[in-house]
Length: 336
Image (cartoon, rainbow, N blue to C red; front, top):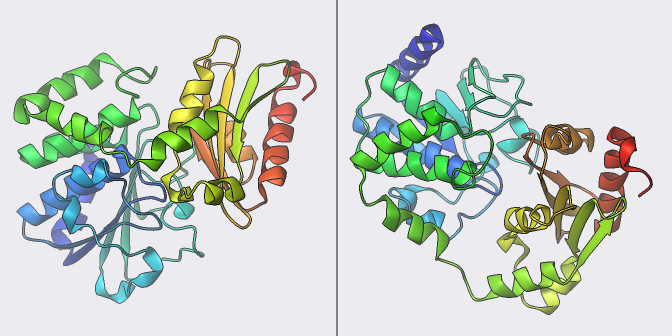
């Protein structure tokens, strides 16, 4: 591990203009890790650009320190000749940089991938991948500590928020004693972390409760009531004046798997013509490895307990694909 830490430090030292990004549908871990790096790079007087990527930042995440510096641009809006280093955080594959086209790195652009997804095969020049880590922010913390980088209050808030988000508020099985130890240290540096969490969770727009209600009224079960799905068509969202970018997929899929007997919860939202976003959660990741299910659709990936996919099909065809994939990987569930 010391070798890759040293290589990352050398690549940063040798760089002149660093690019950072948020993955599509950015979450707390994506935003937290990218902003932590943004603050660090600024502190050592590096020129750095952080882009929002394919999606807009949620109102809650927009309250993180430094979020106002995020440029509303995607990968294809950039002139890559301007950059010599690209630090790619919390992204298991190139499609997590952008889904708007094929992501190709020019030869001059050095790439560093820092991630915790088991499906990540290591597509950077340097790869720091820890699949057993509950969050990319935890990996970044350990990297910063190893390199004796001072963790400022701003960095601490960003890293803590990312760990809190990707552990489900410390509820997921990937959470360890080390995670709590790290978060204890971060909260000592940033004792106002509760204010940050309040802002993260209490910045909804009025249409979000309406979207939650629509999801909860469109639940269907399959495989003898062991898989629950809520799928919303674009026409319904438009009828209710709801922007599909305001998806609450992860929250709904978590709600679905909270029901005893519903082993897998899936939330789906039609975001546009032939584009469906799906979120997967399970009560028992030791039996239902969602990373394998999402990957097997051909359009997703993630972790054992939580995964997602962006499927370029109609809503009905995307649902059929997901159900057939589950049936193929888990024949013990019986008929759909």
